Length: 105
Image 1: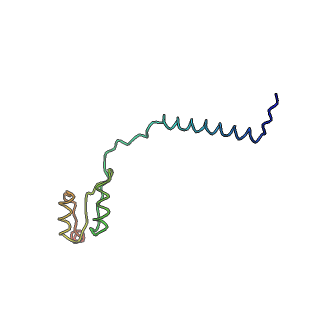
Image 2: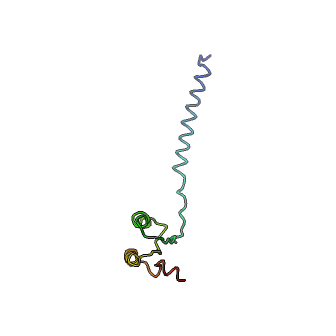
Image 3: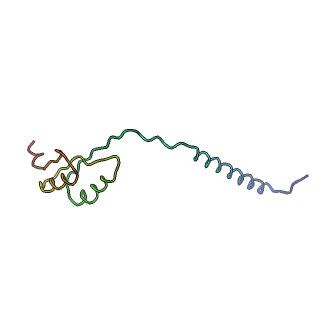
């Protein structure tokens, strides 16, 4: 029996069927794929803020509180009052430097 289907119709049906088959295989592979391994290293990157102005206070410090891989470990400031404030706020121990203390070294 001769089929009156054109070559264009045949190729469209073939490509549509292949597309569905490939899409279903891709979805199945994605579902079966294991989650990527999470590094077991729990060490955090220590960050020191140099200058405690508006940018450090309102953006950098806020972001460091939210991150899981970094922590604030030190500050450098020219204002001793800010050093005391940040030390209490961020539980900093012996990592506070004033500009005069750095210059005197």
